[in-house]
Each structure stands twice: as C-alpha cells, then as structure tokens.
Image (cartoon, rainbow, N blue to C red):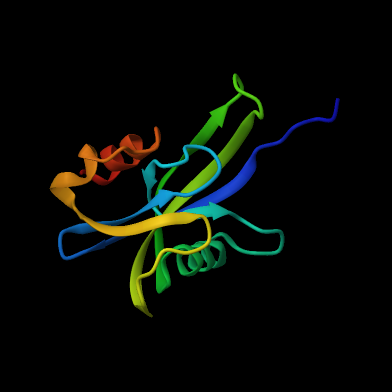
Amino acid sequence: MPELHPTPGVGAVIMEDGRLLLIRRGRGAFLGYWAVPGGRQRHGETMREAVAREVLEETGLTVDVGDVVWAGDIMDEAQPPAYHYTVVDFAATPTGGHLEAGDDAAEVRWVPMAEVRAMRLTPTMNNLLDQIGL
C-alpha cells in the first residue's frame, strides 16, 4: 500500500460590515455544510495564490490576501474514502468582482457575525471562529 500524505489546503476569512463571507459546499466532504471559501493548493502555487484563486472560483470576488488567522487539520480516516487536509486560513479583503457562487460552492452568502454559529458549519469552523473571536 502506498504511503499516504495530507493534502495542503487554504481558506479565506473575509469580513466586511459586520458580516462573514461563507460558502455552502456543493460537493466533496461535508456536502451542504457552510465554511469559509477555500480549497486545495496546487503544485507550484503559493498558499496566498491558492487563496486568491479559490476565492475567485467559489465567490467571483478578487481579494488581497493578508495574514494567517488559523491552521489545522481536517481528517476522517473512518469513512471511505479517508481524507486528511492540512489547512491554513488567511484573512482576505475584497478588491473587486461580482458575488456569485461557482466551482464547488452551491451558494455564497454574507452572514451577519451574530448568525454565523447558527449555520450548519463544517466541524473545523468552530475552531476558526474561536480563534478569530466570533
């Protein structure tokens, strides 16, 4: 059996006017759950480049990528297919584009901060929200 390794991933924490930008996952792990925009980092792509690309693909927005705000692992070895993502989330600021769900995002929405935890969130979202003080 080949040796398995985690897959690198990134996410974007985009806050504006007391709201957090979330996407509802349209495929893959945690289908139908809400999370910050993000995805897999490609070979030859920096993490910041991956954040900007993923945000554009999933939300239609261009962003300036800032500092790291959270890092952790998303894994499930119990259910086939097993997966393990090592994810780094960055702060990001919108600079343009038109908000529209795309790629593997079924929906994209600005969610008031007070309502974020009431959403059906992916498991690591609560760790991220704790880290950023929401």
